[in-house]
Image (tube, rainbow, N blue to C red; front, side, top):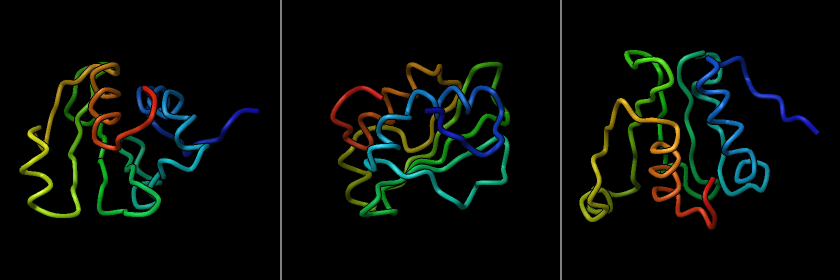
Length: 108
């Protein structure tokens, strides 16, 4: 059964397809905040929307992504040891970042 997503640039549709299992399983939520933005989307945990990621394609090259990571507490961000904003990421690298950020059980 195909999952329908809001209209997004093809690169974001590929990302959503790669994250279909954690989204369908309720381990990751697609934020409604950027639903109408074709070049960006937001993801967060179902139990804590403060642990979130904003993924965007504007200002990026073809098939490249930018991401801003949000943590519930400033101390969490400091101990994560990763840049909170990253750009020029491949899909595979972005999936690695999101997998780590959201502590997904298997690679998305």
